[in-house]
Length: 162
Image 1 (spheres, rainbow, N blue to C red):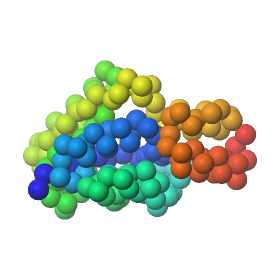
Image 2 (image 1 turned 60 degrees about the vertical axis):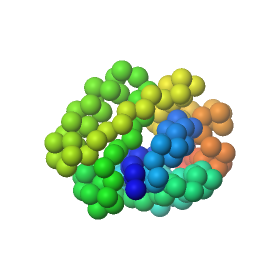
Image 3 (image 1 turned 30 degrees about the vertical axis):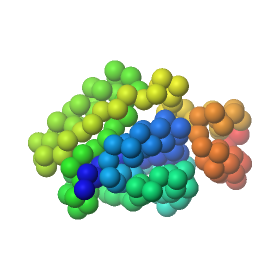
Image 4 (image 1 turned 45 degrees about the vertical axis):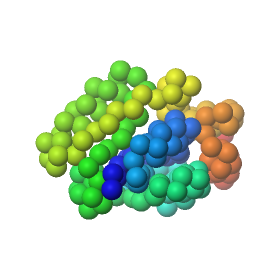
């Protein structure tokens, strides 16, 4: 079975993320969307909430599952018998960091990295930018799945972020 991992924080998931996941799902028998648990960062959404949103927006793809991990990505890949990591690249600046990670992952565990250029419609998208726009009342509906836009509005309203 050809299995790949699409890792990230997904706080929140954007249309750029879903584009990469959907395209990867056409290339592999199974795609595991792996949400990083990073205790040193406080996210807008909990890991469980991010996983729930990811499950909702990927439910149409029968070969995508959502999981979480902490620690090294290569350890998660080994535990899930995944030999490939799929990463979206928005710009050349992404490549510098991601290339170092890819080389380290290959050296540590022989895990290959497939770099997939983002759709030009999403090349500027970042979760942090989406959160900032939403925080100030901007319309993010063109940048995130509908379920995510709704949850962003509720979360930011509940936290009095405006």
